[in-house]
Image (cartoon, rainbow, N blue to C red; front, top):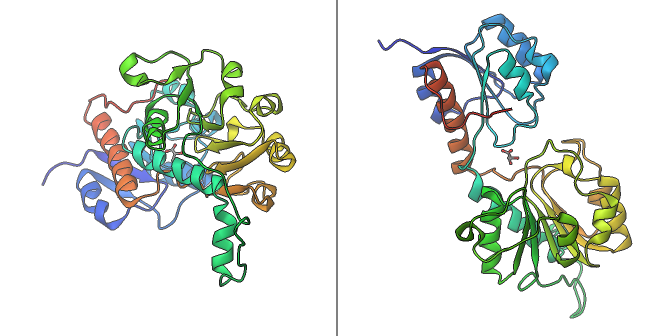
Length: 321
Ligand code: DGY
């Protein structure tokens, strides 16, 4: 029998099709449902694991890291974002943190385009009409959205997901502008126009697309929404923490923003329902990466990270503070 690499505690159920592989590598303690942080900490203290597999909706702040047992050497999150984890606090305790980059890029960019199209084409009202048995017969000039084709898209955050969104938007013949900490090389830019200043880019964006990591404070303030052209479409599949939602609601109500497509919110799942009450929004419940293929690949990558660390290797998906 091959020796196991150690003990693994998971905060989420591990599906059947992954279970055999995980159990071949570890002694596994996995729950039947998603745990809250306190429940995970209790389980970890009970079972003294070497590795922890956790997911996005679970904060792991410094005070939580301090409560992990000394046995923990690696913590892997099944998400590319890691703003829910205090990386510095984990590293200070010698705990390696891994995430799941790359494998969710396409699924997330696809969802981003769904948000854009849903917002631009009043999808919420049309779906509601069909759910109600098509009782509203739209006249020729009723229920109209706006074209997406040919509109100028400004992308904030031109990393892997931002570039995948740009690729898709080019298919809609959308000129691409971008703001990023650093300018990309010409091959990655692929004709997109770089703006070192976000404030200078905003007035040119008929569509504004957020594709940057969270954990860097509020980027879209009242002042910044005001800089967008009237009727602009706002799309966020990155993090709700980047947006002043009060200002977003105001801009949507006043009609300054034409519409918004949102997959992420300041508070999840207890989001500000005024956003849903507005007719000019199209909302999804943080499902950017939610496909069978992608979620499977994310779980595998997170588990591979734990395997690597417990085998004495440094995986590619280690997150640095
Ligand atoms: C992530 O993995 O950080 C994404 O938000 C999932 O949709």
